[in-house]
Amino acid sequence: MSQPAYVIDQMISAKSIAARIEDLAAEIQTHFKGTNKLVIVGLLRGSFVFIADLVRELDLPVEVDFLEASSYGDSTESSREVRILKDLRGEIGGRDVLVVEDIVDTGFTLSHVIKLLQAREPARMETVALLDKPSRREVEIKATWTGFEIPDEFVVGYGIDYAQRNRNLPFIGKVRFT
Image (cartoon, rainbow, N blue to C red; front, side):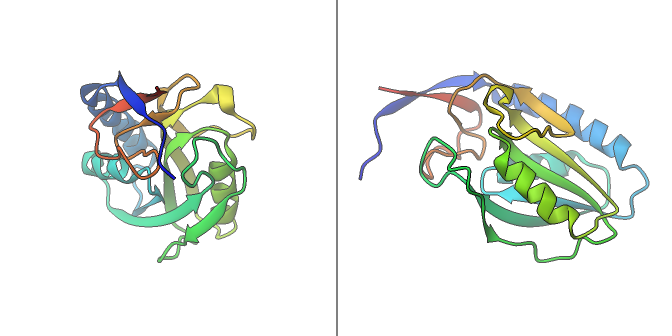
């Protein structure tokens, strides 16, 4: 089945994203100052570009691990059923953890992942999301740090996809179906 036709309108520029990541990194660095190692847990796949840029801005000892959770598939709407497709390779018990999410929408994915990881007893665990759509929230959850709050629009770019396309855009764009 082919995807419907669409155009992408730039919503957040690459320059704005880079500046915000510098600010987020400074706040995260202050919070985790003195850590012997910060485990960055990236939620795949949408957060990989954000993680790469964020980690390069952190002047802390870091370890990067990934967890893949899905509640969208190729749809533009959350199924509200979170599936773990890839678990962490390393242990996080007793360690400082930063969960990195691309976008908090309904909140189901981040809420599920937080519960899963808290059961592993990290020393400290915080969250950072590049984007937040509070108008779509169905589960009460908020990231510790947020890059940008956006309206209820379907977005792509900077690692975020629609049916595995547009991850390579250097900006965040709004999808407009034609």
